[in-house]
Image (cartoon, rainbow, N blue to C red):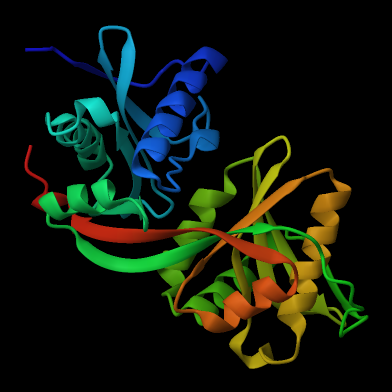
Length: 292
C-alpha cells in the first residue's frame, strides 16, 4: 500500500512551480479538459494558499485556495490520473479546511472545467451544489473604433474615491455596502492589483480593476458602471481605454471572466476583441458540511 505525504506549500521556487505545471498538463491531457489551477497566483506574499501531495518524490496531488471576502474560499484542485480514487483529494481538502476554520471561512466554491468529467464526478461525491458557470475570455485584437465619448477618461483611483467605489460596486452587483467595503479593503492591499475610476466630464460613472499576476499577464475584473449611467456606451469605452493602456505597458495576455448567463456583458467583451477560451462550473459547499 503506497504512502502519501501532504504538506503546505512553502517553496515557491521555479522548480516547485514547474512540478505543479507538469501535473496540470498531465491532468488536462488525460481528461481532455481546460484545467487551470491558477499557478500564476502561487507566490510567497499575497499568493494563494496551497497543499501538495507526494508519492515519494513525485507530485501527485494539489489543492489551492484563496478568499477575497473572508467568507468564501475559492478552490482549485487536481490529482494525478494514476493515483485517483485513493482519497487524495479528500485529504488535501481536509488539510485546507483546517486552515479555513482558523480564519472563519463559511463556504467553499470549487472551480471545475466544464469539460472535465472526472472533476464533475469528484464534486458529486462531496455533494456540493452547482452555483454558476463562467466563461474565461482572452483578448485577441482590439476592434478599430473611435470612442463614443471623447470626454470619458480613466485614472487610477485614490482614497478620496473610496466612497464612490463602494457605492458603484454595491449598486451594480447588488451587494451590501458593508460587504463591498470589506471586499475592496481586503483586495486593495495587494500591490499587483489596481483600481481605475471612470469619469465622464469629470463625473465618476464606473470602475474597473486589474490584477497583474505575471510580467505580461493582466486579469480584468470588478468592472461595472453605475446603473443610472448604463446604456450610454460607457462600458465599451472604459474597456477599450484600459486595454490600450495595458498594451502600452507591454501586457501581451489580457484575460477576464464572465458569468455565462450574462449575455449583455458577453456581447460587450466579444465586440472589443475578447474570445472564449474555456468554461468553468462553480460548485458551493458550506464549510461545516465537510467532514474531517
